[in-house]
Length: 184
Image 1 (cartoon, rainbow, N blue to C red):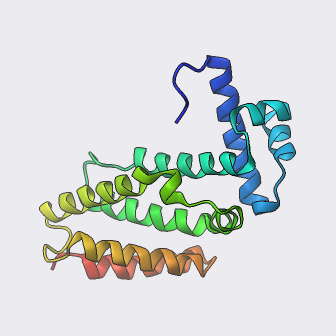
Image 2: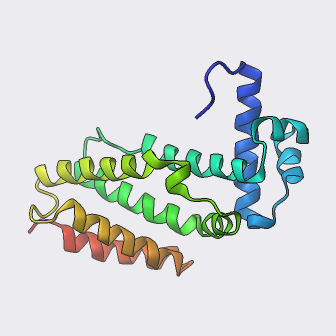
């Protein structure tokens, strides 16, 4: 979400700062320095603060960027509706596992994602709902499963992902979950 009317070079610098900040905060959490972000982005500290006046503003922009990217990449028109549903569901779970450091940092910095990006959560729910409906229409997912039930299952899978670093275990667990959702 780049501000409108921004010069091309400023836009590039902003994107470089965001990419560097995502990596730095992902590695070091709330203790990460904006100086390290500037160094990795190849810009001066003034450039970082020109775009993001506070560390919290920078972090909020990272969170919004990650969530927006997730929505943008939702495979809403994929040829295989069942695979599209499963892959998007699994992607959300994987993002949840990867964002543990981000969630901890958000808590330390006092960031409320619902305030920072109020529409993004709804966009994720909408995308998953569309994918569910398409998979059900294709006969791949049980027709008696509601969006509310899928969101509860997703929340549980995300909480479980936060508690294990074992990607293979997450994958096997999702396979069991998807088997339970499969139309018979």
